[in-house]
Length: 174
Ligand SMILES: C[S@@+](CC[C@H](N)C(=O)[O-])C[C@H]1O[C@@H](n2cnc3c(N)ncnc32)[C@H](O)[C@@H]1O
Image (cartoon, rainbow, N blue to C red; front, side):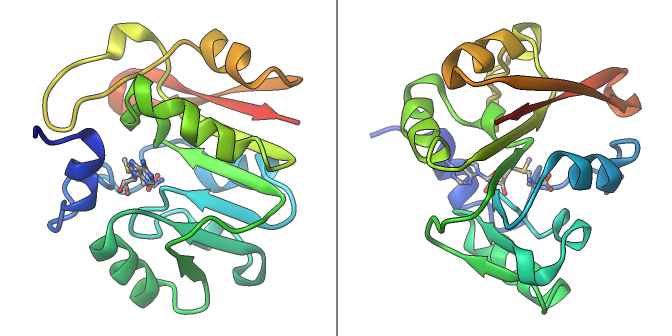
């Protein structure tokens, strides 16, 4: 059996590509954007090493990931925040630079889970022109594709992402 995109992330013990190389916060105004997009208790899907956690009150935050090494680092770095290995109820489901790493055939199951939350926030570089094979492969999608999949009212925001000379698109679904 071949390896899947999820295998890459699950077994990525050197945490390669989990945080942006050489620049931990390349998104301009990241924490302000996160705070304005999310509401209530936040379920940070694909939280990685907890890079985003300090944007949120520890009492109103759960970080979730399939990479055990990343969760271990997150727990040490942010001892007051909670990190879990199962989906938990919350007000906002946040996926920040995560869904582009989920292959098309695995996406429906993830979206079914996300749809149980009242607010969904997806932030990443969007546009099929960014798709590429490799390690890890990326499966960028057009914003309209996510909008069609979630079928909810949406607010769109753009976050400058000078590292790639483009914007990162943020979709907030209610
Ligand atoms: C590029 S990192 C982003 C981490 C974090 N959101 C941030 O912005 O710093 C992608 C994260 O998604 C996680 N991930 C990938 N596929 C996943 C899946 N199917 N379920 C949960 N997490 C996943 C990876 O383990 C990795 O930590």
